[in-house]
Length: 296
Image 1: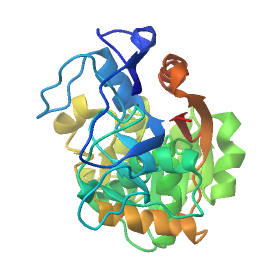
Image 2: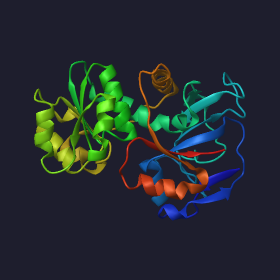
Image 3: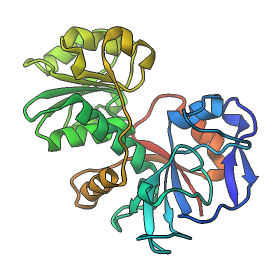
Image 4: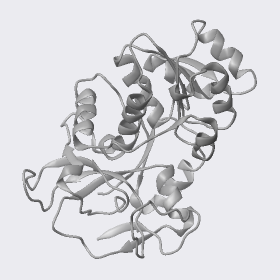
């Protein structure tokens, strides 16, 4: 099979299309795979805990495809989306049956390939923060894939959402139902003007100054969760994202999409042969929605 893989650590240009042995004994034939900062970190030299990775290495921790071989309740030919730690940026991947769920027919392949990480991360974060109906949630980086999902999930829970983003993404956040606020000098004042009733909970997808401002807005630091500033989290007493991905959670989130209760924006789909370009775009840290790789 072909895969977007690397044989040494480095920048996006270490990614190559390589011929690798085709795996067997599980699902599935990949149609699309998401690209995110996690994958760039693996490419640059970070190793997910508990894994003994050989070479060459294939990044990618979310995918959608068709079951090529399977066992148990998953029939060959079933369209699925799922999650893993690595190996998703390839034509085939072997994963436990418990880590996939049927893909709704209403969900395009490009959406399905990048859906898992953003949607599940947002769901787990809001659960960890104990978001309640009637509260006001501040999301830093609200236009990204996690932020997009969190904005919508929070509103489904009856919360009001204030989202920070670049000038270019203000209308996008309004379309999602959030009150948008532009990054930059004076951010705290703009947030307070957008939420005169105060901020109850913060989901931080930006870190740095945005997290510092959050500490001034919310006194209970157990109601602040950072997705990016892990190095300072313990010192500051704020929460970090935890594990909790499951096929059950993924199925529930996919059902919301299928019913039209949530949307998921794919910013750009690259053919897997252009994985290096996809990684370069992800590492800019800008842009709305998700980047995915496609496999024809």
